[in-house]
Image 1 (tube, one colour):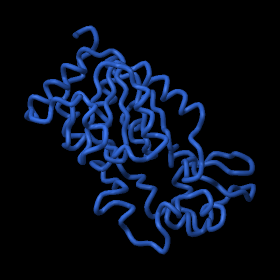
Image 2 (tube, helix red, strand yellow):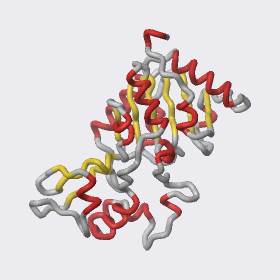
Image 3 (tube, rainbow, N blue to C red):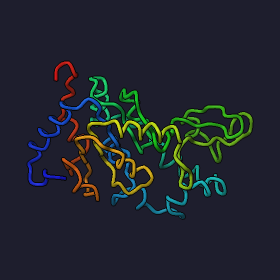
Length: 254
């Protein structure tokens, strides 16, 4: 239960530091709000992806049906809005990498497809919705990096002639079984779960936090969520602002 509503930011940060210092198996569950400080827009804010005007709603464009029936328009949208390849990790990504190196963080479970956690140095990352950095020919399976997609025109094709599909989970597609199982295993094993940058409205990913049985649940999100009342600590500040203030003490120093 959230008892932090009336605490100052300083006191909430101190409480978060105590949670982290007493934990051995932290899992971080993140959404689009983790990457906004890297210049990648989220989906549902006023200036987010879902509030921009296109001939079709983004949810329709990013569906498997649309990909199969209108691939040229899919890739036009995808190149313009889904490939921020120049983005760099922000303070949140970097702190999580430090916490993993310190032996505190078990893994990152992310709904993002931007590869910024790995770019910051995180090793154990469960990408629930895939990654724009992996692309494969649907016919022969040949791998392509995202720069090939970015530089292509129309529907990108393999040297064998097959269509190259990004390894991202589209609407109407299921999550990868191995990724989902790994994420659930780690969340079940966690003694502290930090949920950040997500409205907790996208399922099945949002439902994974129900597997948490540990001691400390922390929510960091600009807007309130339906889980706020169940958390031990709630922050409505930016994710990077909160995590930047945390020290990644190695276990030997705890």
